[in-house]
Image (cartoon, rainbow, N blue to C red; front, side, top):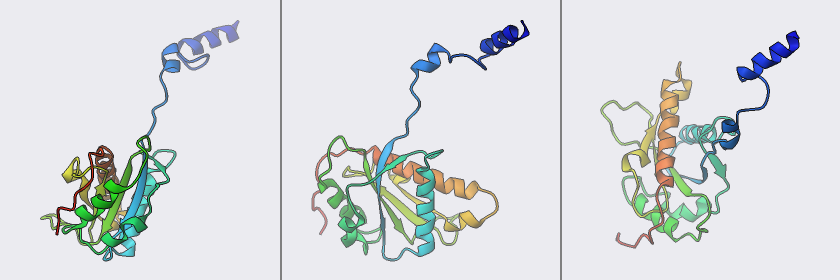
Length: 193
């Protein structure tokens, strides 16, 4: 008799027995699939590249990441002629020129080019050693320019506490998410001399 009472109580409080019909009809949340191509500019340092790749690894972690990384159809070699262009110069034109011309199936997950650069834009509260990260989708212009041109601080991983590291991961996630929202609207025209 006590066993019947215990099982009844557990079922009422949702601790045993079948899940509610509402829980059975809701699919598990899925993370967006993204193909990421990392391009490192000539001046970027190894510590900066490791830091950026570490943040990408965390964002794609199967247990708690925000994205599901898929193998990109494009390789960094496609953008090799862009590697000596600074992020403040012709880089946007160069990356978008090749990315909008890449033959990618329409039903593929979004492809994003993530560029690591040594020199972050000067900020009044800037930290020494910041790096610049720029994310490009398949549009001819960025969907959210402020999110897609951001900075990371490679020293954040060595500091006590995680606030700066969390800020870096969040900034990179916003950068990629904004780039994935770009839609292909045509070719980036050769409008730069």
